[in-house]
Length: 147
Image 1: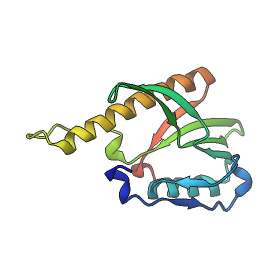
Image 2: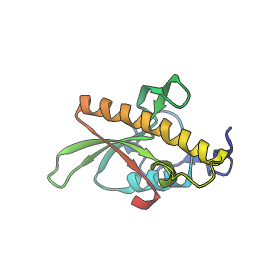
Image 3: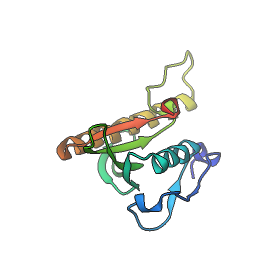
């Protein structure tokens, strides 16, 4: 387990509306932000179905120079204001991981790690956008700033 996740709150999400969740097995949240969004979508009346880490997209990670699998946090179906069913593929991240880190005056190992994380995320998200465009659905990244 890497250092950045040691303090992250993890657990099993118990939905209030289990019929919305179209997956078998436990629903795992890997951060407080994920738990909050899981709860938001679970109780949102316009949401018709939810699945966590059900969509897996292969991608090439330029940071590690390897082919990897991207387990996207959520796929959510909902009714829009006109009653149409829409689907969104959703990644949930801390805002600090969703933007390119600013280069400090002195390049530290911490900065290098943040850059590598950002590069990996960009690779995953670009591939997710391509996957979604072929399926006619939207890909979005949600952060604590969207809550």
